[in-house]
Length: 484
Image (cartoon, rainbow, N blue to C red; front, side, top):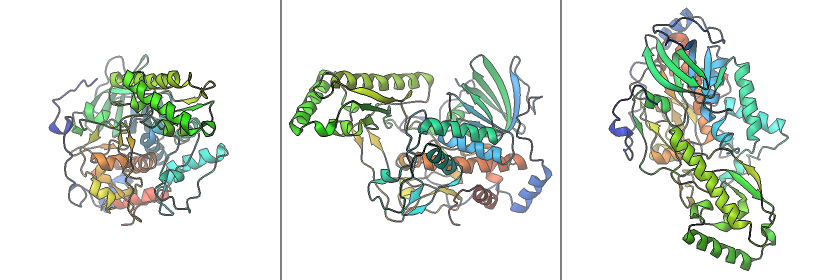
């Protein structure tokens, strides 16, 4: 789909090693706060409506309508939704493009409707727009927040907030509309070009072809798809984490099944794996654990990949095939005659594809030691959570460690007028296994939205926005910013 293809760099090849973190400094072209505010004052904030009109510094492609925006966010998932809402609330013209039918990504379409973690060691460390939407979903659905004052120990999931994914999607959409964000579903970029003052992005959808002229571009695709179109360096490992199709089975009572029967069933499951009727990943090798959870997050889809339409389609097919294998295995068994599907997501959730090579790379050591980056704009908190085909064994952080997120990890190395947010941020694989979770992605999405909006209004690149202005604006919009 890349109409401006280049030869991949070494960093984009499978198995390429992540670059080392840069020294503790902001990118060198950061302008002074006085100069930045002077530029900001010389420009109008702009309306929230996205204008349709002549190009700025580029010709429209014949047959394509043309839109103009200050901030264009590609990807309406966990991070992109928050980035767009934040940019819209700052009064800049914002367009949000989502290839699917709803916002929320992992939280909604993939069904991981227990976003976290927002609290660490008895204290809230992530708030802002994401927390606002999560708590609205809890209140409107008469759900309950966990008691965050009770320590969880190694059972970190006790502080996950259970919400209705469908309701969260509706609330996120409503927040976008109220912020003046133009939503464009069922579209994706097919080409991206530099212009004199930003970007020209070709969007293609069902019977639709649109050119968007934007000052700032934010890639929140999860796969760094825009970065790939531009030919900038991306990286991924030869082996990536498996995905999960979230579903829940019911119609049986595990407590009523005696130990001998369960042991016999486990033996039959192992025999079914040997015969090819099941895969061990269909139940993560532990049938008791799978049945105790009713399925839900207790299966894996090896080789899950959402970076192209072809690999994404195969990932979803393999997820549904795994479900059918489990149903056909369990249904004939005693005690499972009334087995039924109580919940089934439309898509298999994908944990890992591409990551960018950024101005700063967050390493495992940075994360587990709670490094205080000088350009930190948000916190993150989650165990190192690398999934393998047979399951996951989280590695928990040491007491009172709270990692930080540097702005440099959201800026592709050597780029201008370009940011990312979400799981494709610049990080090594193990650090990314924790950084990719929803609360952290919401926090970095809000930081990207603030930075892109301020850069668009001042006519500068994200590297030139004074860090103090970013932090002050984030705090004004409810976010929690790491102490300087």
